[in-house]
Image (cartoon, rainbow, N blue to C red):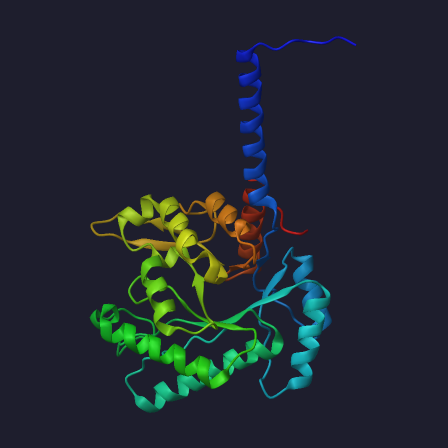
Length: 315
């Protein structure tokens, strides 16, 4: 057996190389220690819970939107919960898209009840959460822009509604969250953190849709920085994420247009890596596409982008 004597320079060089290699390995493990859960609509033509769950897995999904079910149907709720759990498909979210700030008091109270029922359903079926936008003061659109949507009055009303919904349901496991918007709060990571602290309820969480925060050229061009800021500041509270993309239609004023993942400029490699690093593995849900073929293409883009980044999807 040959022996070699290292001089000091060689020893330090090899030691430094080993440290760098270990650091790179640890960094890679940070990205791949948790597989991603991708989800989306299944376009199923069946109501059978077992078939629904299996169809999601066939599509490469390990997350799903909550199937249509009434809060007053405990047998079906249990059947769906059991089937999806059996096949390792997480029910990501119950969406309740209504205006919690409707100017009509009767409609506003009805909408608050609708969201409260959605949170109760999420808790019963084992969904991660119930999500809505905080609402709008617009008189013409339930989600539309209005100058008062960016005021302390809006912020305080959103906080009060979140508390009211959570306190009425008292969920044991599901979270309630607001989807971010470009023209209504929460509209930034800092605003979301302030809202989480103001609501002051363990059941209030963050829902991440970074495209909805892109409301300026700076955010569009520096969306990687925006993504990192979102995860740095909101990561521990993120319960579910949406997958879409943005492109800029150049004209005489700023016009961003929502497109399918891979058709725009969102830094999906960073988006997927940052989701994968979160220990609680929030799902990433495809949305707003019209045809199964469009979802197939978007899903394939995300899978390919993730695999190139060394990430897994549990498939």
